[in-house]
Amino acid sequence: MTGIPGTETIVFAMLTIALVLAFLRLLRGPGLPDRVVALDLFAVISTGFLTVYAIDTDQQVFLDVAIVLALITFLGTVAFAQYIERRARDE
Amino acid sequence: MSELLSDMLEIVGAAFLLLAALGIIRMPDLFTRMQAATKASTLGAACTLGAAALHFGDLGVATRAMAAILFFFLTAPVTAHLIGRASYFVGTPLWNGSVVDELRANYDPLTHECEAPPELQL
Image (cartoon, rainbow over all chains, first blue to last red; front, side, top):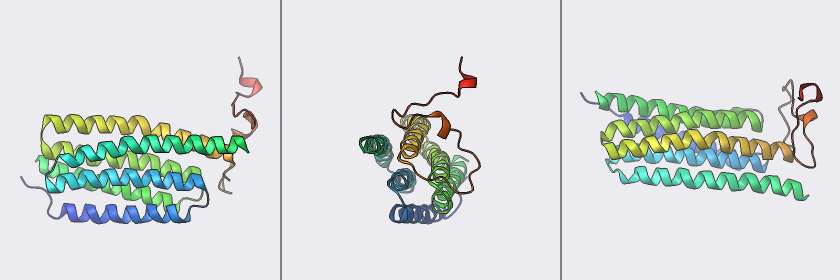
């Protein structure tokens, strides 16, 4: 049994729209925390994008790239949160 | 059969990620945006990874996908908590339609420690 035709195209289109929306929040977001949340979401959408790309091209390697991106994003967001809190405490 | 299931999971996952992005652009303040982005994006990424596990039909890939899903489910709440906590201390304004802020009376703005109200303490 084959899959639904044209799935990858639809999924790529949806994820691209999602990336654009997250990027708009990154540009607009009134404060630093809004931008950090937008950046976090941006990375998670990129992880999904890479996973779908791995399925589309039948290359398992991109799945590893997605996992590494998820790991790095977690560390980056934790660092940003620490930075925001310490900046508030120092003032 | 697994191809059909994989394609459906892919579409569901992408739909959740799109919903997360919609939430982050449409919600009125940081905390509502954060909950939309965190929960929907976790489920979306987990769905796409599950689709990959089904598509490749390989034990190694499935294990890695499951590990990544577990990692997402463990780290998303942690990051959301840390950013929410930090931005609350910075004084990020709540949406003006918010009805209650139970944290305001119970935390020390200098030490950043939170205590239960006196009537609830043991």
